[in-house]
Amino acid sequence: SYELTQPPSVSVSPGQTASITCSGDKLGQGYVCWYQQKPGQSPVLVIYQDSKRPSGIPERFSGSNSGNTATLTITGTRAMDEADYYCQAWDRTAKRYVFGAGTKVTVL
Amino acid sequence: QVQLQESGPGLVKPSQTLSLTCTVSGGSISSGGYYWGWIRQQPGKGLEWIGYIYETESTYYSPPLKSRVTISADPSMNQFSLRLSSVTAADTAVYYCARASGAYSDNWFDSWGQGTLVTVSS
Image (tube, rainbow over all chains, first blue to last red; front, side):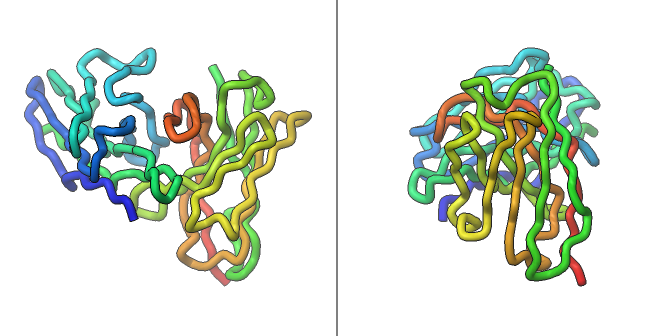
């Protein structure tokens, strides 16, 4: 089955850049979106169609997708960005949406 | 701003059917362009797409769950529902209802309910 691989954790200092990767076979041939989930809360969409930001999402969140890897970048990371981040893509073979296992971003 | 709220039993016995309803406010499920779906999250784990309904009639299910899942809509109540049959402990999860924008195979979930924990246990 199609799998999306994310690093379990990423640590970043306040004000620095955090990069979260999501890898999958030929991932760049489709779109990827990203969600932020804080403890006890529902996921929030932060990036869709690889690099578009929904209204209300700060500009410090950006995304890219090429080849086998999509990347969510948080520029000038703030303490409030500490959360789990999940990527989502379409599995063309199984015809279903799949999510990565999530990356915990810690702002030290 | 659309809002979604899940409701239903928090405890279901093994082999029985899990039934949840999502009530939508601030927008109509009958208006075109959106998909209304269900996603679950097992305790301490990641997200799993269950399926969705489009324009209150067309349904799309995740293949591993397809034989046990039914998603339906009640436009008069502005609600949509999930039924998952023959549940086991592996179905214990927080169940979210969500609205998806975009098109089939290129959707993103832009509004979510608060989620409801369903435990499968005798």
